[in-house]
Structures are given as structure tokens and as C-alpha cells.
Amino acid sequence: MSYDDNNIFAKILRGEIPAHKIYEDARSFAFMDIMPIAEGHSLVIPKCPAADLLSLDADYAAATIQTVQKIARAAKRAFDAPGVFVGQLNGEAAGQTVFHIHFHVIPRDGKSAPFAFHGRKEAASEILSAHAAKIAAALE
Image (cartoon, rainbow, N blue to C red; front, top):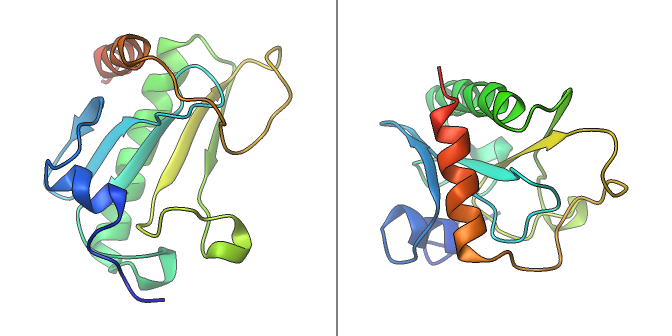
């Protein structure tokens, strides 16, 4: 699968599209999903052009999964969730819709609506900003 430099996550990394940032380091970026399936649904992406896990540089893979772990811990604390779902899709057949590798981090309380992988309704900007701040504040 070839990488499209104009995908939405590449545009976010270049600052062409705004995002509700949670965390950023030299190799990864974490932000709120604008179509969340649960409160605190966030995304973690590497700062390199890779369409999927199979094309991701190993050093970026290691750095990105460390950020996934950091965000998962923070989201679990921030939303007082007994569980956290981490998901990653590779290819259209697997349900991937943005072809820049990304990890979904979703706090789960076991009481909310039945689990569905992709949200269908865009959340209000002020809610996403509040959630991003809440998770960022819970980072170690």
C-alpha cells in the first residue's frame, strides 16, 4: 500500500488541519478522535509516513507504542475506567479508513453503549478540548 501525503493525519502533523492535542514528542503525536465512540477516545500516530503497521519503521513503531501505553494509562486514570481498548487496523479490508498508521485508545467502563469500533457522530469541539486537557493532565 502506498502512502498518500495528503491524508488527514499527514495534514494534522503539518499543522494544516487543527487537532485537539493530548501529547507530542519527537516521534509521535496523540490527539482526540473527532468521531469518538466513547468519552476519551483518542488516537496516537507516528510522525513518519507509514500507511500501516507493516510499513512502519521499527524505531518509530517502538516510540509510538510507548506513547500508546502512556496515553492508555492517562485515559484510564482521567476517565476512571476499569479498562481501556487499544485498536489498530491495517488495510481497507480490516476497516482502516485513514491510511496513516494510527492506534485508537478508548477508555471502557463496561456500562456504556455496546462497543462499536468507529464513531458516527462528530463531537463538539469544546468537549474534545476538555477531554484532551483531562487526559494530558493525567499524564505521568
